[in-house]
Structures are given as C-alpha cells and as structure tokens.
Length: 287
Image 1 (cartoon, rainbow, N blue to C red):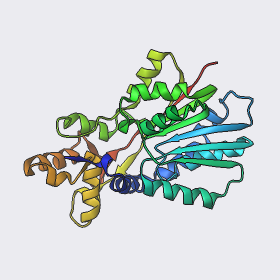
Image 2 (image 1 turned 90 degrees about the horizontal axis):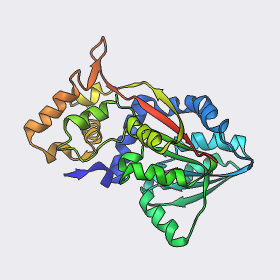
Image 3 (image 1 turned 180 degrees about the vertical axis):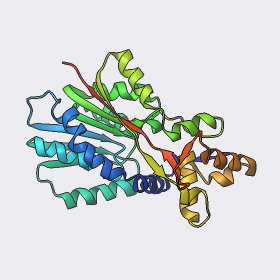
C-alpha cells in the first residue's frame, strides 16, 4: 500500500482540490487580517526591524505568502527561508514570489523535508534563529511531531512566535483515521496533541479554532467525476490507488463510512458535508 505522502505531485493535486472546495485561501486571507495580526504581528516581542521567518512544508506558497505579506508590511526587511519537499511546488512558489515582487522580502529555498533541512543545517553549522516559524498542515508528515515542535521552538528568537495549523480533533479526517487505523498509513497529529506538547513544556500559547465544512457530494456519491473521485478517496485515505490496494468489501466499507453520519453530515438538500475544522496554535518563546 503506497501512501500519498510518498508521491508529492499526486498529494499536491488532492491538497489543491480540497483547498478549492473549502474556499481555504479566502478563509486564510480573512484570518491573516485579523487573527494573524493580533496573535503574531502585535505579539512578536522584538526590537529588530529586519526579521527572519521560516516556512516548513510551504507547498506552492499560497497560504504562507499571505502571512509573508503581513510580516513584510510591518517590518523593514524579511528574510524568508522556505522548506518544501515537492520540486513542482517549490517552483510554483518561486514564480509566485517573483510575481509578488515585494522589495523588502529576500527568499532562501530548500527543496527537501524538514528532517533533511535540519541535517543540512547541522552539517553546515548553521545556528540561525527565526522571529517567526510557520508549520501549516505539515506535522502529520514529520517523524515524531512532538519532538519537531520542540525543535522549532528552540529555533525561535526570544520573543518570536511559532504558528502551527493542524486539523481539529472534531475534523472528519481524524475520525476516518481512528476508524480504519489498521489499514491507513497516517495518524493525524491534531490540535489536542499540539496543546499537550505546549502544556507539558510550559510553552506560552494561544489557540484559535475555526469551524468549516467541505461539500464532497459530487466526488463521493456518483461517478460523474471519476478523476476527482479517485483523488478524493486517495487524499482522504492518504493512499495512492486506495481502491486497488484493498479488497472490494473494505473499499465499500470505507465509502459507506464516509457517507455515514459518523463521518460527515448531510444538508437539507442531501449534500455530503465533510467537517473540515482546523486550529491555529501560536506559541511564543519566552525570554
């Protein structure tokens, strides 16, 4: 059974499909003007006007650039380091950065995983610290995410802030993983897991919870969109060619569960609504 996370290009297709369906970028843009400003821009405790930021698993930069714009608007110069394992995604990010043409933002690119970045950093003897670090939907794919949070925290400048975005415990993805954990390749590191790390380590943090749903009716209940249906199922199960990887009875059981009230809800007009709640956790490093 091959996990989607081992096929970066295919994973990106699923990620973009779901992001489009849930209106993800519009939501984040609104939150960047409110929650990000009050939780990061106004709370970052530094006298520096030139700051450094680090993006972990930045994908094509659609979301991270929204935060970058806010940081660049409030500080004189921004050195932005980007970590992204998918070559296609990082090339798209570079094109987006060139299009934005923010004169006070300087980019550094690392095409690889967070673990590879840390190994490279250690080899180079690089002890650079950052005023802001973002990890947007990436902790699920990092080995030992709890340790990764501690590593990110230690890479912060005093007074700096780590922005983590993860699925909520109420999210449908998490329910699916719990129901079929014996056959699915991923365990979602949810908000409660992040908060447990914060509380155990006595980190100063703030949580923001956002409720939303995604209409997946057309991709689940019919075969009118065969490619999108396949990508949807593979993305939800985090498995390339999920249908071909399991027995017919198991596949049917998963599809039935996705359409059940345990996983999704139905609107008055019969639409299948996946619960897509997510959380931001803002962790500030003490002096």
